Image 1 (cartoon, rainbow, N blue to C red):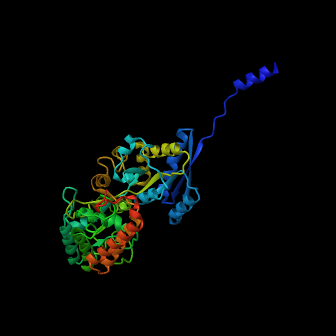
Image 2: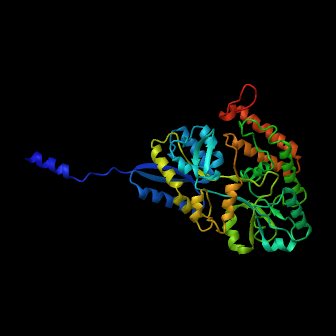
Image 3: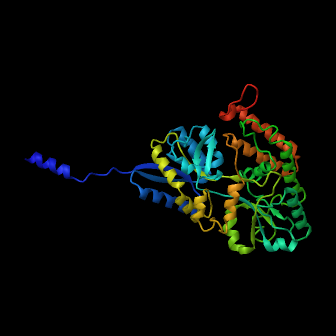
Length: 422
């Protein structure tokens, strides 16, 4: 009888639910708004289901890449890592992350703009919620004073016209240096900001058909024209070589600021309807801008890739993309997400940035050699800025990067016997 009672009680007992499986996520420390938006997205995911629990660890940005490399050597990588999109091919080539093609719904990834995807060798390796956009900022009243037209998407400034506009502004005596190009910035800014000028001119940093050849691309005639144009901006004192500070536009000391949409909120609050946002200059093939910001990938060592994928699918859902944009002010990477925001919806005051991202964005070259390529291009521009002839500076960049590619056996891209690439 006692045995029967125990069996009945056991059968009637309420089952104990298994605890959610933890999914570890690493990200770098960023601004307060972005960190808060990330925490809120994680909390919504964890509340919405009971199978998985995402646990976040924030790492200082200065040591973030080194932390990933060190953890990979001892098999201690988390399931999900944040990556700056241009570095995604390098992470994939090094074996840190896995392809997402079969893990994420194609309907969701297919809606993403260029700035929402990280590719390598034809496969998707990362996804993001937002982008930033390059633009020319100016003020309507200051342009009107000089009789300078406002550039539009229908009629951007040509490169020649833009140089003439800058020369006119300088000649007026109102501006010692009429253009600010963030001369105090270092590192990735130069490839992000100025390789689109190459693409606008019909060339590029590297031959994207095979990612092994730069000769005839980065030192082609169109590239030389862009390099000389860039150097002439400094030679003609239209841009300050080493700015004393980064407040020239706010203080009215320059007419134009070539920078990112991260300035949109600050400039909108300061200048209101006097602020104008224009596309970058057209070097012949239409304006171009760099695509993509920080994104998320799943590590190869992750033992719960389906749980990690569920979280990434959550992040790129329409509601979450809109929520991230509303919280941070950054550009959403789907049309549906933009429609749910005040600023980027059709008719919104920042809609122009979404239009730029949709029409002009070009991802940086999807090669593991991109860090070396970007560093070489930065050095070439620094040399041109200091007076070196563009042909010499770009030839040196070509030689340095092609040597790096050869030393790394093509970074996973095969070379045919004929010397062409596939």
